Length: 257
Image 1 (spheres, one colour):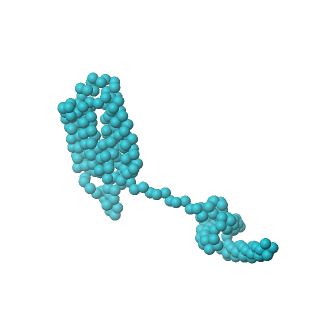
Image 2 (tube, helix red, strand yellow):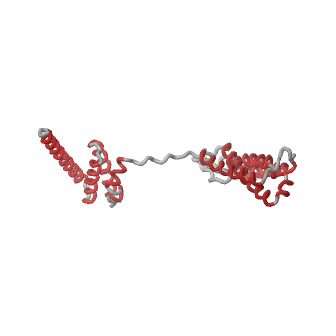
Image 3 (cartoon, one colour):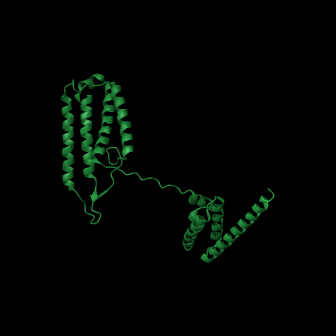
């Protein structure tokens, strides 16, 4: 035990001398780099923080060299190290435990996904509408064939497909090199949209004469429950597949070809 203490003391003395030599070398490096007093003190404090956190010597040297280069560049524009990097403690922490960049999610404007998204939203809209109507005036709701569950589902699916196609059709697309608009001319797009709307309205009108056996009218509360399920399902669907450009969603990004 008595022999171990002198050995530890000797090792500690050697380590202190080594650290002093490292600090002296660093100070000379900072002076040669032409750092101001404030920036000089900043790097010295950063060195202490890194070593206090147990960072190995080679890594400390690598980080300090890169940091000094940044500070020298910023110093030419009058910016201090603190303004550039934050406090020595905070900057040391960012070097030791760097924050992971947020994962970027790929947005999707696939026509099939848009069709499903729109169909779910239309299903929610129609069922909540007919559900409320059914609770307020059950007799009138049962007379109208368009309020049958089969009619609602059919109109929702067709409307979903229609709006999915329209969203894709109307999305702006330009050649990145020439800047010219690509795809069908605007007038033709407008005509196609109008034809699609007319077809949708026609299908909606035809559902009024559907046989009640195949198009039953449900209780108003059941429609409301379906509306809630469809809406929640659509929100989950949009979040899961990051769908953009739907009937109730964010606009589609500009396309380039």
